[in-house]
Amino acid sequence: MRFTLYYSRSVTKNDGGNMAKVKLQTAAEIGALIRATRKEQHVSQAVLAGLASVGTRFISDLENGKGTIQVQKLLDVLNALGLGLYIFNRWEND
Image (cartoon, one colour):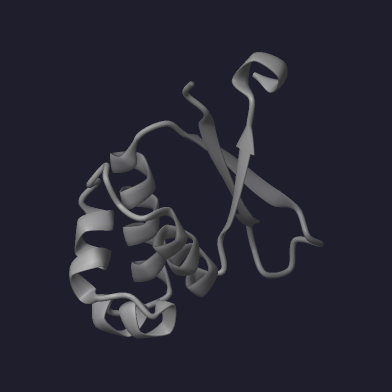
């Protein structure tokens, strides 16, 4: 079964809580989002790894779209970046 992942984050700091929702379907798209968010926040891979309690190799693999990463570590990285992850059944909410 394949699920589509969506992430949400505030569009601006003063947007009244409005969230941007982006559909992500591949490990490469998730990695690109994580890299872009990390760079927007001016955080190095080493610092993000420390904040998420993972190794820098994991951050590199994740950002490069490795498809076999550990889910809990992915969630830890997303949390450290202030991102939320939502999973929807695409047949019910597409």
